[in-house]
Length: 517
Image (cartoon, rainbow, N blue to C red; front, side, top):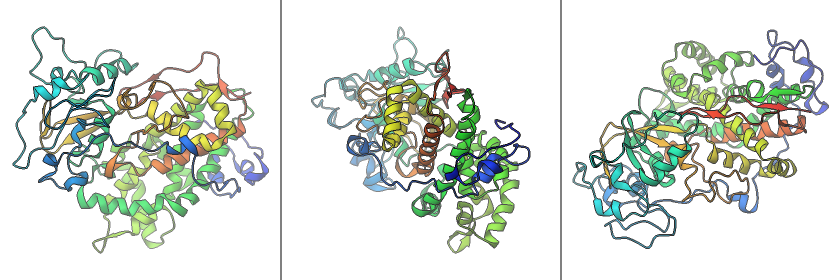
């Protein structure tokens, strides 16, 4: 627990009497009063950065649909087929028939996944001409069974040292193995930006079971449940939620203001996302510590029959149905689908989706965000002087250092590619960390640049399964940085600098040792 002080002094007049009521954690957590006092801290700003930074969330289409794949598939031409994964990135690549188009210098042509023809899925029809002519693809080496006796085995995510530094492997995969089966990891790997973006949006690739979160729902059930959640995460509801998150961020940040040094992960980043999730669901603030422990177990487990979570949430669901409020749990508990309330297990699963937003992935994303700014003092000063750039700085950090590096999907049908066929039922690993540093999509991709014209990060997915928590996460990051910059004007790295990040599936700094004065 990061809170061990015996008492609190007033933090600031504008925050009301937040600090006076904050006592030892064992008696009353500091966020309890923080979330029940109206400090008048919200600045009411709307909109985002202007100019180039205003385009920060724009995503350039990286592939076009294949009508061959669209026929006979649910969803039609708009969203049904996998967007070629993506033989035709913007203004480059090869024609559908395999004839070479004029390539943009330095561009790479992705693996070329198409939908099955109208008469049914083919059985691994390799297309050597299309793959061989693709500049920089090295595609034939990606196909199992096409490796010559003298060829080295394809790279693997299980190679020693990958969890410490995956980026050399990512570069190799993008350049020479855009689609490859990793036997040791047990999945097909997709590493290029256009391919990953297309895979995340394709309805034939679904989240592997088990799980009851929104990511595991498909078809009409997914559409209905998503529509139920959306109103509570935008507009006035989101503005009301901002006030609670903002107050908690100021309490956590100002608590550090009398210190000389601190670990921002243990004393800030691990707590604020959980506080935001608890506030969104309208759960008791004194349960934040317990909810935080559940959040750390991961989004999938939260939605998959977690006994303690079920036992905790079901009484709250019953109370919300009897006396609903304005929180998200009330929205879910009173919602009706086909004339009936959602089953309790569905409500718990959807609540677990949001609690997952307060878990390890979000606190790692927040930690990487702060680390990137601490690594670049000039950009930190720019953000301090121009807070309107905070959303752009957050998006750029998600692009360069996403918290989730691997998103797993499962193929519902055979996926025909220029290098082979991904069998139905096979797992596909979308390498988010590799996509975010694809040099064919981003100039100087290893550089952190808050003025980058259009990061187009994929950290929250794409298509109909794009994470609903994107606004909540952005709100949390904005409140966090506002509070830290105000409370800690001399914030900088402690001697020794930034600690190394680690992790294969999720990744980020485990500590942030900083000097505060």
